[in-house]
Image (cartoon, rainbow, N blue to C red; front, top):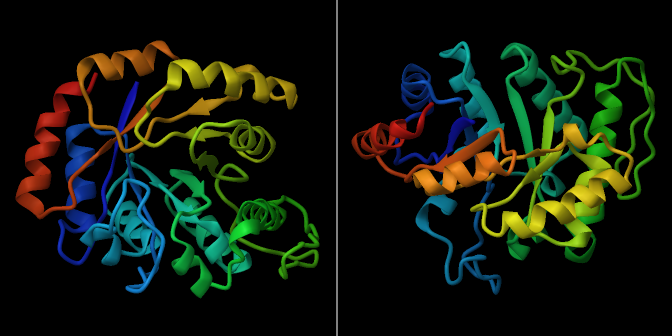
Length: 277
């Protein structure tokens, strides 16, 4: 099983360049980065874990800029977002950014998507909260139209459409691997089966019960059972936990690094390296 990492990179942490080089040198498979454009000070939305969002949420680097730096100083390290808040983006501009990064990195990008949790952040991007899931699916469909091999038009439902266009570069494999994050449930699993390549469950809890449900939804949608990808995300590792994920068929797990300076992050990397096969 491949072992990747995720971290809230900020203006106060280890740099993307230093981290990427150290990850590749130690044999880690990839680096995934989260996204928040801003965290409104006055808000009613609690963090999913409860209370106020931690300091690193307020200082997060732009994941695509940071991943571009990581790509430039590595040859094999996989790159990913965990997660991109697609509802908050202009999908035409984002499709270009994703395709460029995937092209320049030689197809190393995984696009982790999510619906978001911070209502106030989304509201500043003119996102109507009750329709955000449908908005994400709509914008993803538009991006796929721009990545299509032939000029393809798409008529969106939420204010963005694109006429048949030449849009280059294309992602290296036609489209990056796309994973959807979120809590287990029928609605999420239908969306995964309809729109993406798999699931990015935060923390990886409850997979024994959830995976059979997801696999049924996947097969009911006519998808090849062997093509489903499940990547437990932001995991604090133990040998037993990682062995359990491997037994469930997970080919990759993403370990959580602390949002810290260079010395602390490298200390944790050295500890995590014992889990590398």
